[in-house]
Structures are given as C-alpha cells and as structure tokens.
Length: 244
Image (cartoon, rainbow, N blue to C red; front, side, top):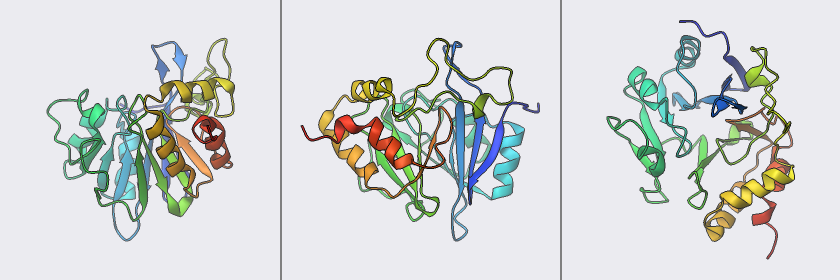
C-alpha cells in the first residue's frame, strides 16, 4: 500500500532522508527518520533503518544501488530490521548489542557494537566513521559521513519540533505544552547529562564526535540541522566538555 506521509529528500550529495510521523507513546510527536548513503567507488548503499520499508522507500533505495549495510543506531531503533533484511538478504546487518537483545530472534547479525573489539572494521569506514557510546543509556552509535560533513544519530540529539516529519499531516509536529526541544535548550542539556551512565566513557566519546569536521546533523527525531551542527553538538553536550 502506498504511503502518503513519508518525505524523501536528498539533503546532500548521495545522502537521502526518509522522514515520517511518529509519536512516542502515541502522544508526543518526535518523528521518525531513516537515512541512506550511497557510498563511493561502487560500495553500495548504507542504510540506517529506523522507519518502515514502505514501497516509496524501497523504490528509492533500489534506485540508489544495492543495499550493502543495514544499521541499527541504538538499543531501541530495531523494529524494522527484519523487513529490511528480508528485502535485502545479502546486506550486512550491524547493531549495538543492546538492540540485538530486543530485536527479532531469527536475525543473524554481522557486526555488534559493544561485543566486537572496538577497533573492528565493518567495511564502510572509508565513507562513514562510527563512535559507539557505551556510556549512554540507549547505547547509541554516532556516524560521520565525511564527504558531506554530516553527522547522523538517533537518540543522542533531538531537534524538535519535527516539522518535516509531520509536513504531510494535519499536525504541526509540536510537542503539546512543550514546543521545542532542541540542542541549545536547558532541557536537552539536562537530558544529555541524565542519559550518561558512565561519565568517563561519555567524555571520551563526546570528544571523539566533537573532533569530527561536520556542519550538518541528521537526527532520527526532529528537523535536520542543515548548518551549525557542530556548535549544536557542543551546546548539547557541554557538560562533558567543560573541565571539571
């Protein structure tokens, strides 16, 4: 069945987003987003699979080229891995260990952040770097596509309201009684501090991401930060960057 809500957009050369409505607990609009990157030198397509593989999404992925990697970015973005893997059985499936504990038990994973050695290479590193946040509650992985200066992440950074993700609905995409929940807000800074369960690990990984040369941030939840992404990250996670 055709999907009338998904917004498919090329945000930078060879970087595509698939944005659609999603409400947490069926109440709070936070939006959902998958990301596809066409890798260089015939390397196929890398997909952060966080939304349903509807016909429109599949058609665009098939147009971009063979899907080579299916990625779960954290413990809770695993719901659609099986349908992606069923559609693209030869693609490598890679996820954090915490996601595997919740995902469909029939799935076989080719790489596991948190279980594999930290220096493990999965084959996409020429195009995309990854940083596994072992100290973050949701065990997120941040990704950096150097060619487009884009950082991609799931629950590390929100940029609400989710205007684009709700642009094909009658909703504004705003959270009731809250409005915005962006990286510069005091609430987001409190969130970043509260979600860090291992402060030393958080400081290490926040600094790693801070060293990346990105300008854009593609979050799973909220609008894409088209420019100024590095400063947004520094603002959201300054609790781990300020000397203490």
